[in-house]
Length: 112
Image (cartoon, rainbow, N blue to C red; front, side, top):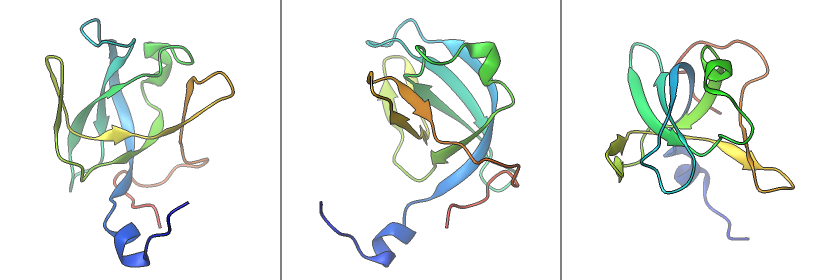
């Protein structure tokens, strides 16, 4: 495993956001949802493609807190311009489980 410096880690903007909407993304190569995530007044609402369809239903995602990287460059995914990366972990079957705070924190709070 490669090590990084604290300064390199500090550049990654891992922020808390709340899922406002989640819709199927049929144009994606792998099953995915389009998420609209509110990262608070300083960052705003960002779109993301999330391959989390095997573990989550769209309506169950709305209102949930998630952790996202908000300072990656935008990425074109089919017809969608993804503006953030919603984070998660692969389970033993390779399905993505969301990385989430275990209590409420302010939208836009930075992971320390």
